Length: 121
Length: 107
Image 1 (cartoon, helix red, strand yellow):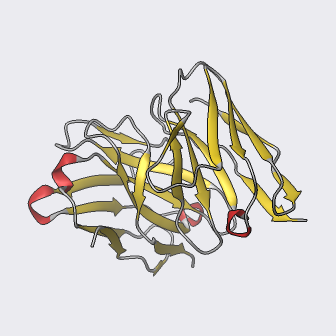
Image 2 (image 1 turned 90 degrees about the horizontal axis):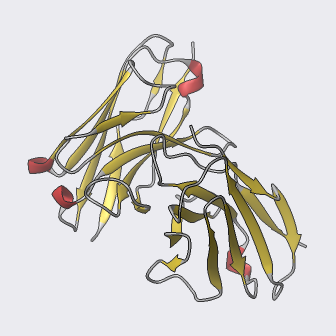
């Protein structure tokens, strides 16, 4: 089955760290750029970070630059997001998303179900 | 950053109605514009990419048009399963910004 499955979401205190993972299956993971997109409760969609098929280009939203690190392991068909110095405004459902293109300048044609991150004291 | 502005923010319509949602970019994005549908409690789903190309498996009642800064999503005859929130997104550059969403509700 072609799917993306996120994991790692949790309730954490402000200033702490959390690592998210995304397991891809049913397609050639190494042929696609990948992204993380988040959605705060009751709000719209916000692109967080993305990287090309070979991790040659990595990009971040200004809101997470310097705090979050995206990475991938093509041998394990997995995408990761290391989140440090978490803030209450990082509270959201985090989606793992596939780009239609390897270079990452296309639309998002596959989404996981999301993993919830709650930052609260 | 490129700002994406959708209008309206919400609308009420009946089954069978023709519905149009507009998306405006703050600068030229050629045809690098995508539309997504998000039903309540579910992940978004790609409807249209490159402004006017229907994603595989998406019903033909959905169509997109536009280029440059002004774009439109049209649903030719609204069906019960189309009541959802719709987002536009630019893939012209990074950050890959989304519009604020348009909620389509039942009249």
